Image 1 (cartoon, rainbow, N blue to C red):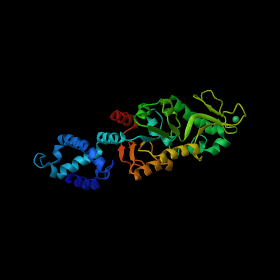
Image 2: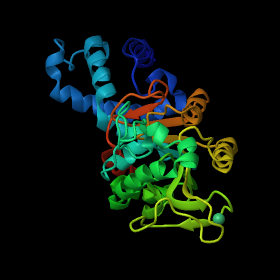
Image 3: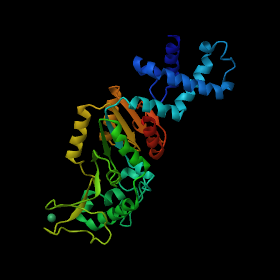
Image 4: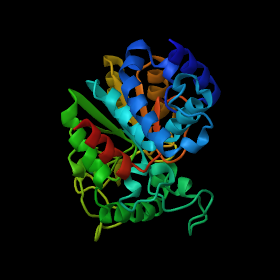
Length: 328
Ligand SMILES: [Zn+2]
């Protein structure tokens, strides 16, 4: 009892990124206690200089030492990783949300997840912002311009290969009854890695369609294609099935996402996304409110970092294979 009330007091002071021990529920608290002790023991050995009191005489009363240990655990990446994996092991239905960060280690830039070829505010040769060049208006009125930048993005995507993070996500599928990946990336790397249940919420750059007759075509390589391409059947303009700036999200993808959330999920893992779009942040915020396990993998703070139970401050290519290892 003494330890629990002490943990509770300390957690109020240090405001940990992962859930404070006092808020994770009695059962979970009981389950993690042995882990906490073993890490605490390990840390005490290496950090004994933090305390002026020897632990052999009165370890239970050494408040300063416990405070230091808890603070170190809060910052200990491996501890957070082990605890996150331990809870994740209990999950059956898992939702994974990915952003440009997961493709960064495949060599794709992370700017707004649509190609990353321009920094904010930088103008294109035509004097447009990249958002204007890649808008539905310019695609309709000056498709050459939109296509020029779409080809640049496609070329970058084509030369990129899936990385260990994409592959770890595929391997994670076998650990749960159901795992769905929702990605904001248009690079198709989850698809090429072999993810089974995939929602490409911003589309896939290689999936082309005719704006007049809706004829679809999957094109692996845009090299040598006439720009802007036109439909063989009706002569209409062809464009990729991606969400251009100023466009609505595809209803089918949003419906799929909300169905998955409403059916009930036990855990959400959000990876390499700043979660600036409400439809990306909302499932995480809702899950956190309902005390559902939330794990964030991102070296930086994001719009959801303050609510997630575990924040693994690592690149996806490091954190996901590690998480997989702990689950195996
Ligand atoms: Zn057509």
